[in-house]
Each structure stands twice: as structure tokens, then as C-alpha cells.
Image 1 (cartoon, rainbow, N blue to C red):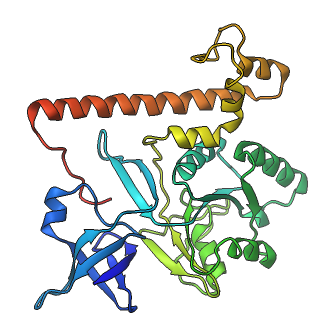
Image 2: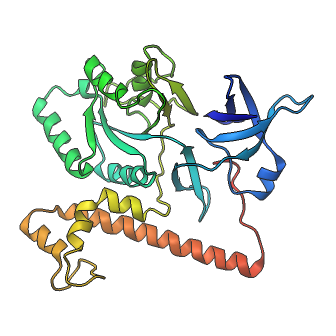
Image 3: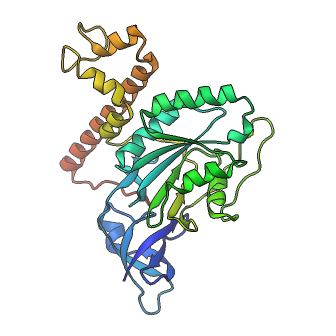
Length: 324
């Protein structure tokens, strides 16, 4: 049988078959021992229902058209796939207390997936100063480099409908953001009922408490599906050059005009990037972030290459993670 993984939590993957029947599944022994791919939310899988077995068995994970990947926080040099086969990544950041550095990292990972990317500025109802709201939105739009930026308020049904329009029927969106930015509340607004638990709001900062512990596909009435991702603290990059290029297209476009192809944008003569910073058309913080993320990616690449060399010499297989 064939089906789609619609939920992944601390237990076993929940698979929905092509005829709509849902069942908990475990991975076949061959997948656990011999493959690097484990089923994640959004994966299309082939599974069986052995007689006398209380769970289905996932026999095969079909090729993914895309994936949201970060470095596994529990391993030195292994990627972790958090979702697969989606059309849109919605990056949620709060208007109050927004972290531009985190947003840049989220955008890099989102662009790397080759999906449509949208930035959602949540909890606009907590900001009374329209000038402050406009300033934050302007800053985010400069960082987002042409990516759509939507301001979301629980008190403004039109803002919620604007998000719904981005997830038409037959499509899947993943909702990414740290704990407390209002992702579960937004899902409830999109669905029109309390399908996701939400934490209480702290009076001192207006932030919610982390409640989502699974990655689950939720159907939007009259629309597609949205995957409410648990709040992710660590967003270490993995093979992210393409994502960095998209997230920092302003820096890379300038770099094409540098005198030297291998320009580090430090003290080299004819550096178009440094010239733009001096002219005030590029913020120095953009170059700093670009360098930091490029260096991180290069460091991880070298560490992975070294790990592969060690494995090839010793013959020891890579230690498997328990899930992805």
C-alpha cells in the first residue's frame, strides 16, 4: 500500500493511506539498519499491514521532491530532515522582539528547499504604535529581498485570509518559527477551530509558551494543508550555499562586480561590496551575516569530508540517528 506520513511525534509515524485510512507505522528492519532515510512528515511511503501485527510497517520511503533540512543537533556531521514534499515555507517571526539574525538563518534554510517562501510577522495586535510596526516591517522587507512579507493580527480577519490564500487546495505549507511566536494560534485561525493547543500569554512580554511537540499536517477548510513545526531552537545549516545565495542575493550580486573572483570583501582593491557599504547602499551587518553563514557552511562541509575519510579508512559505518 501507499500513503503519506501526516504526523510525526515521539511515537511512531502516522500514515494516511490513499483511501483515507490512518494507521501508526514502524520502520522495517531493513530501513532501520541499512538506510539513511527515515520517514518524516510529508513523505510518501510504501507500507504493509502484516497479519497479527498491531502496527503497519513502512517498507520504503519514495524519493522526495524537496525537503527542509538542518544539521542534526545530536550528531557532528549528519543532516536531519524535518519535513518533505511541501510547496511553501512560511517563516513566522514576532513583530515585537524580532531577531534579524535568526530570520536570516531561517530564510537560508527555507530557500534551500526550493519551495515558495513567505515571511509572516505575527502578533501585530500587540503593537499599538503604527510607526514602530512600519519600521519593523521595512527592516524585514529589506532582509527578505523581495520575498512576500505579511503582517498577521488575530484581530484582523483579512490578514488571516491573506495567509489562507497562500495555501490553496492541493498544496502543503510548513510553518516555521521559534516557540511562542503564535504558530499554533495562526493554525487555529486558519482552520476556524481549536485544533492546536496554545500556551498562555506572559504579561511581561506577550509571548506564548511552547506547546507543539509533533510535526502534523493540518487540513485547512477550503485550502491545502499546513504543518505546524515545533519551535526549533537550533537551526544549524547543512549544505546551504544555494540558500545563502538566495537569502543574500544583494551581497552576491554586488560580488559579481568585484575586481577579483575570490574577493573576501575585506581589504582587496576593487571590492564592489565594500564600496556599497561605504556608499551606504548595503548595511555592514548584511556582509557580517553573509560571512558568518558562509564560514559555518564551509566548516561543516570540511568536517563532513573528514568524517567520510575516517569512515572509509576504518570501515566503521556512520552512527545512525533514531529518527529524522
